[in-house]
Image (spheres, rainbow, N blue to C red):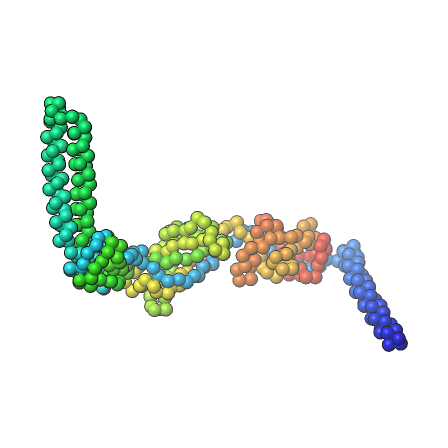
Length: 355
């Protein structure tokens, strides 16, 4: 029982001591405030240094990395069925639009085309003959319609057979190089089978992401510096050719850079490169030194000089460039901002400007 009483007494003593300390600190704070206010009444002025707010332009850069891509990177597929009988172009060879890459056996398709062509020609003559007879009332209109229907059906078959025969010549739809081939002589290919992969190794692009805060400073046609560790002494450039209209993951916008000076073909698709975009801030942006801000950047305030008094004002901050902080709201051109002595003053304190 005595132990319990001693414990309760100790707790009470500690609580009383804490209360006395709190009251003492509070009294000191109020006393200091009263002394400061009294100093104001007596004419004391706190020395400060200021800057005058004005729009600033800050040159900065966006740096991003990525892998180069070819503008042309396609898998060429067969559009017919049959066996490969001839290969004209192999992996690594340069090709142009219309070049024949391979040939598929066309014997059956050619025979089918000839038969369809014969029927088509015959029905064409029949249509002409029945038309003349119909004008003489020698055949009914129903008979003429039937022969015309047969003619149109055979015509469609003839066009289809002709296209299938043409498709036995597998040709390139683009200029470029054959990066990979997937066929051999005697191999059977079906409609949709991949024949080869074609790329354009000179015309390259780079996909980059632009952060939301930089979106307004980026435009089509802006130059981009391109560098790679593969050629550390060479300078390459690009041009922004596309900027997305919709923000994606992380509130960033997709942009595309067209590589300009790759005539020598040094850069290749798949290379890892660094892109650097020089940007200039909007002329209506305001920046002040970080030391002028009281509190955190999320809950920032600054002292403005109004009638020789320091007035505490809340502000909204933005980008941080080196030791400069962008002020989005709460500051206008001509405002006098305290940058030194702000930690020794309080709201509405009398101040003396030293600069």
